[in-house]
Length: 103
Image (cartoon, rainbow, N blue to C red; front, side):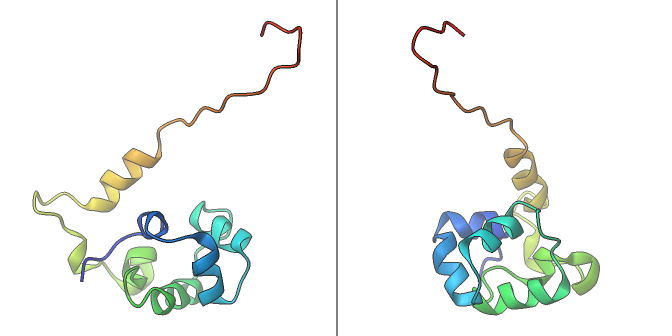
């Protein structure tokens, strides 16, 4: 099985679906996936079980559970680094302008 991080997993399902499996709100899943809630060993274990191992404890907390041997890609680059680089791009949003404003 290919191990993935939480953000990648949430691309294949919804935050609501994972929240139901964890017994929490969608907002809690959002906060976990965006770093607003610290990923504790308990959260890592619960997410590992709720995703049937698709997101591993080692992927979420390698400092506690050790490195994930499946995390190396074919090129040898750790895929977490590549994922981190792609998610660090600045996201811009359009704001709705009030009628009569030019900025």
